[in-house]
Image (cartoon, rainbow, N blue to C red):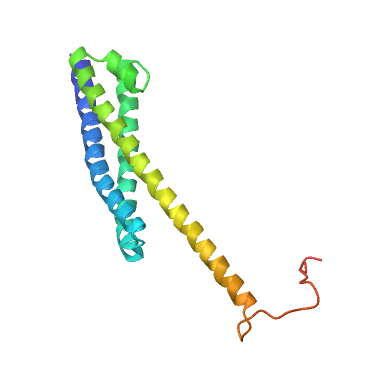
Length: 166
């Protein structure tokens, strides 16, 4: 009876951690969508304002992940099985296993959604950096080709790099 009580407490702890993860991931997704809008509108001030919130929520998700992994290991040791969802669900009583599997499925779907938006925002940032790089290259080319006080000096010899160690 003691094993069932300990196991029940540990599955409730794991479920509580996963519910906390789901709640945090929902808030993170809202902020990530706000970041997507800010990136699309090229609103740098808004992106900078959102970033600390995103960092905080991502750190919180990592903390919850670590706690859930440790809880899974303890539960698996108690049940004498591997610390993965499939093994834990199989080792638990049917109703408790189904409840754990249901929450685990929600966490997996939410994790995929978060990863999808993170990937999309990363691509938007990379595209913006490519655009900026191209713009700077064009500005530098025009500045080089235009006569005026900011034009690069023409030299008759190639630039030479000197190795200080030599």
